[in-house]
Image (tube, rainbow, N blue to C red; front, side, top):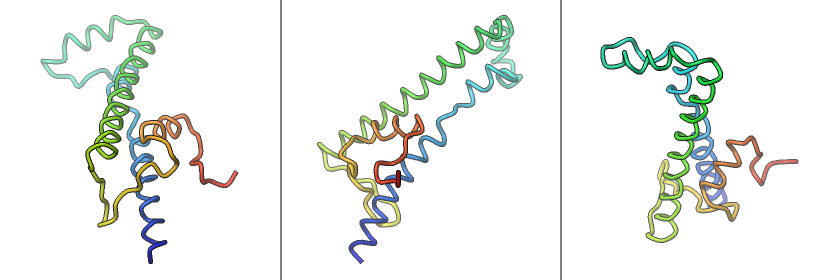
Length: 125
């Protein structure tokens, strides 16, 4: 039973990190590259600006926007990691505490590795 709880704790951790990787691509970057912002009165200037950009400039703007989103996710994980390690915060899913640094690395490090396509350290090689 204890092993099941540990296994679930680890799986919950992996699911949490992978869930953040999954939601990483932002809608704003996609809007820059495709349809623009929703066609509303308050978005007219934004859409005019985007429309004035070359494809190369749109690619660069989309990249900057994505980097900002990545930075936000990273910063939240740094904060959560500090709260867990320094202030006793616990993340619990289905009454099971999410594993704390199961690979001897911080949440934000694991997120960056998974974002870049690295396997989990305990995966079969």
